Amino acid sequence: QQPVQSPQAVILREGEDAVINCSSSKALYSVHWYRQKHGEAPVFLMILLKGGEQKGHDKISASFNEKKQQSSLYLTASQLSYSGTYFCGTKGSNSGYALNFGKGTSLLVTP
Amino acid sequence: DSGVTQTPKHLITATGQRVTLRCSPRSGDLSVYWYQQSLDQGLQFLIQYYNGEERAKGNILERFSAQQFPDLHSELNLSSLELGDSALYFCASSAGQGIPTGELFFGEGSRLTVL
Image (cartoon, rainbow over all chains, first blue to last red; front, top):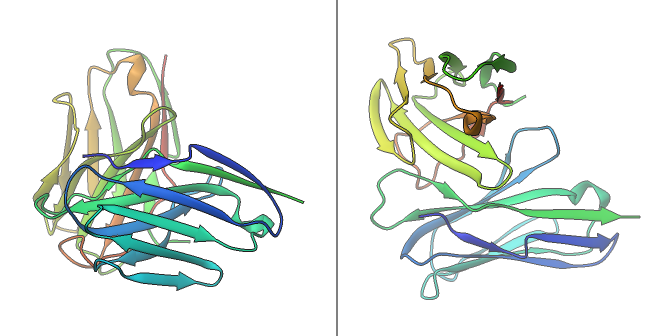
């Protein structure tokens, strides 16, 4: 089951904040965030395993609301290097080993 | 460099043809995953192998098949190709047999163009 990401695209000025949301219609075991720069492979950012868990990676953090089957990725004081497409991947409680990704959120940070 | 190697990087072929994409996982990784990336669908999970055995299957068409060999490299076979099969095909590997705590390491992808 493919998770739904919103928004589809965001344009920011350097230093601004952004939130990317990921939701699923099914119960989730974990949420995984990846970033893909243009022409490159997706690169791992973080995994959230428990409901309510929040993790941080430099100025990028995420939360996971297990009850709502949602996760949010927070990018604060955005830098030019944050530009790329962000994917959330979800593993359902009963979906075996499959990690299903959303369609992605394109983020462009401008000077 | 993720350590995952995919060949070929680019492939152009005609409808109805068959192609094979190859993936070598990171040294020591036993799990291999195949994903298809198209503009409108994002990253679509196709199939996963762990130590030679199929572990999970996603939206993989019957015209597609995959296998993982004893040396752990994997091949994705695409046959009776259609225009809609044009996409970027990623291979990823991870250390464990499942997903829960496993980071996926992606290769640079094989771009398939079907004319």
